Length: 106
Image (cartoon, rainbow, N blue to C red; front, side, top):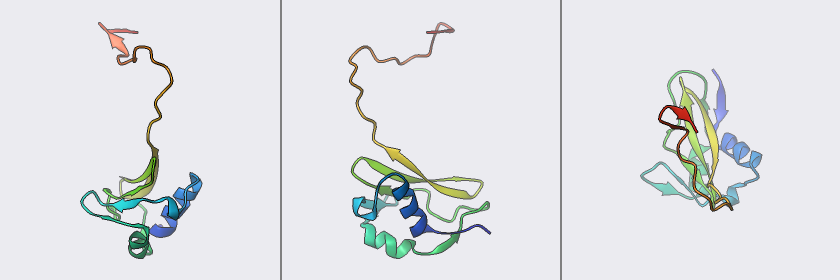
Protein backbone atom coordinates (compact mmCIF):
# COMPACT_ATOMS: atom_id res chain seq x y z
CA UNK A 1 0.00 0.00 0.00
CA UNK A 2 1.36 3.42 -1.03
CA UNK A 3 0.07 5.87 1.55
CA UNK A 4 -0.19 9.59 0.99
CA UNK A 5 -1.81 12.52 2.76
CA UNK A 6 -3.82 14.46 0.17
CA UNK A 7 -3.31 17.82 1.89
CA UNK A 8 0.47 17.37 2.15
CA UNK A 9 0.66 16.05 -1.43
CA UNK A 10 -1.24 19.12 -2.66
CA UNK A 11 0.96 21.57 -0.75
CA UNK A 12 4.13 19.84 -2.03
CA UNK A 13 2.92 20.13 -5.64
CA UNK A 14 2.05 23.81 -5.21
CA UNK A 15 5.40 24.54 -3.52
CA UNK A 16 7.25 22.78 -6.34
CA UNK A 17 5.78 25.36 -8.72
CA UNK A 18 6.23 28.40 -6.49
CA UNK A 19 2.71 28.58 -5.05
CA UNK A 20 1.33 28.44 -1.51
CA UNK A 21 -2.13 27.84 -0.04
CA UNK A 22 -2.64 31.63 0.06
CA UNK A 23 -2.48 31.62 -3.77
CA UNK A 24 -5.52 29.32 -4.10
CA UNK A 25 -8.70 31.05 -5.29
CA UNK A 26 -10.93 27.99 -4.87
CA UNK A 27 -11.05 24.20 -4.98
CA UNK A 28 -13.77 22.55 -7.08
CA UNK A 29 -15.13 19.11 -7.87
CA UNK A 30 -16.76 20.47 -11.04
CA UNK A 31 -20.13 21.01 -9.35
CA UNK A 32 -19.27 22.70 -6.05
CA UNK A 33 -16.46 24.89 -4.80
CA UNK A 34 -14.81 25.66 -1.48
CA UNK A 35 -11.98 27.86 -0.27
CA UNK A 36 -8.56 26.57 0.81
CA UNK A 37 -9.53 26.09 4.45
CA UNK A 38 -12.56 23.98 3.47
CA UNK A 39 -10.38 21.84 1.24
CA UNK A 40 -7.64 21.54 3.88
CA UNK A 41 -10.14 20.29 6.44
CA UNK A 42 -11.39 17.58 4.06
CA UNK A 43 -8.02 16.68 2.49
CA UNK A 44 -5.98 16.15 5.65
CA UNK A 45 -6.41 12.40 5.38
CA UNK A 46 -4.24 9.41 4.51
CA UNK A 47 -5.25 7.44 1.41
CA UNK A 48 -3.75 4.69 -0.75
CA UNK A 49 -2.38 6.35 -3.90
CA UNK A 50 -0.97 3.10 -5.30
CA UNK A 51 -2.42 0.89 -7.99
CA UNK A 52 -6.05 -0.23 -7.73
CA UNK A 53 -9.14 1.95 -7.72
CA UNK A 54 -8.81 5.74 -7.71
CA UNK A 55 -9.66 7.09 -4.26
CA UNK A 56 -9.56 10.86 -4.87
CA UNK A 57 -12.18 12.47 -7.12
CA UNK A 58 -10.63 12.92 -10.58
CA UNK A 59 -12.77 16.03 -11.16
CA UNK A 60 -10.97 17.85 -8.35
CA UNK A 61 -9.20 21.10 -9.30
CA UNK A 62 -7.18 23.47 -7.12
CA UNK A 63 -7.34 26.84 -8.90
CA UNK A 64 -5.07 29.88 -8.70
CA UNK A 65 -5.01 33.09 -10.73
CA UNK A 66 -3.23 31.70 -13.81
CA UNK A 67 -2.62 28.07 -12.83
CA UNK A 68 -4.41 25.00 -11.56
CA UNK A 69 -3.82 21.48 -10.30
CA UNK A 70 -5.89 18.65 -11.73
CA UNK A 71 -6.10 15.02 -10.68
CA UNK A 72 -4.95 12.22 -12.91
CA UNK A 73 -5.05 8.46 -12.51
CA UNK A 74 -3.65 5.44 -14.31
CA UNK A 75 -4.57 1.95 -13.12
CA UNK A 76 -5.47 3.48 -9.76
CA UNK A 77 -2.14 5.25 -9.28
CA UNK A 78 -3.04 8.87 -8.55
CA UNK A 79 -1.28 12.25 -8.78
CA UNK A 80 -1.69 15.98 -9.31
CA UNK A 81 -0.69 17.60 -12.59
CA UNK A 82 0.23 21.28 -12.66
CA UNK A 83 -1.22 23.40 -15.47
CA UNK A 84 -0.73 27.05 -16.44
CA UNK A 85 -2.92 29.25 -18.59
CA UNK A 86 -1.27 29.69 -21.98
CA UNK A 87 0.52 32.99 -22.57
CA UNK A 88 -0.24 34.72 -25.86
CA UNK A 89 2.85 34.60 -28.11
CA UNK A 90 4.18 37.89 -29.42
CA UNK A 91 4.16 36.75 -33.07
CA UNK A 92 1.22 37.82 -35.21
CA UNK A 93 1.86 35.74 -38.34
CA UNK A 94 -0.46 33.00 -39.52
CA UNK A 95 -1.10 30.32 -36.92
CA UNK A 96 0.32 26.91 -37.91
CA UNK A 97 -2.66 24.55 -37.65
CA UNK A 98 -1.90 21.59 -39.90
CA UNK A 99 1.05 19.18 -39.75
CA UNK A 100 0.04 17.44 -43.00
CA UNK A 101 -1.64 18.53 -46.20
CA UNK A 102 -2.52 16.07 -48.97
CA UNK A 103 -0.52 13.39 -47.16
CA UNK A 104 2.67 15.49 -47.02
CA UNK A 105 4.24 17.07 -43.96
CA UNK A 106 4.24 20.84 -44.20
